[in-house]
Picture 1: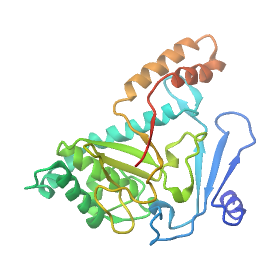
Picture 2: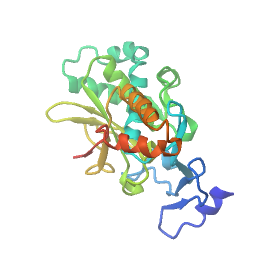
Picture 3: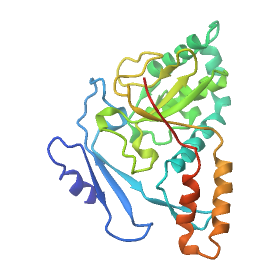
Picture 4: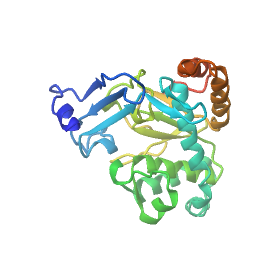
Length: 278
């Protein structure tokens, strides 16, 4: 009922609306963003995992930190960078599952660009794109290969894993298709991103993004060009644990101020980096 009420009260031609819970306290202080995008499978900016149905995105403003033993507000892109790092590391740790297939697809190719293009052609054309809600576990690489289908994030995960498996110099960027408007810098959450972009480092860099229509290896789709993207960094979990432990130690005599102490320390880190896509 909550979803239907908010979704049906969108203003004409307005595709998102922000609503805040009026209750106090981190566990219930939740930000809702309703996205209601008409399906457009042929449009150049049609983002795949939004195109099937209107739905409700829930942006939690806090999460329980086990190490600190307290609710901590997720009001920092450094926190998002840690989460993205964990997702990236999880995929990287499973590359052995796809190495044989990646080597088969790139056999006889000499350059990094040619190999990345071949992997992209496979992911784009041979792995069926399905709705985000039909395939939530996007990092199960063995399932993606076995079923031959994945959601948008799963296809990007497979592309990244295959590149890493054959030692291609790749990175991952996160961005949001322009059809959904600009990224809300006040809502620090991975849920805002619609695309995980695999970047083959070189002169120039080459970009690989699963699309609903014909894909172009090495090129960004029009819906992402010129937009802001969050760079991901590997292995941020350990420094994050150390920071959380230190914050917990500092707040031992002031439990109610633990979140403020933690966020203050977190804001001083340089884990999140924004770039502008070409």
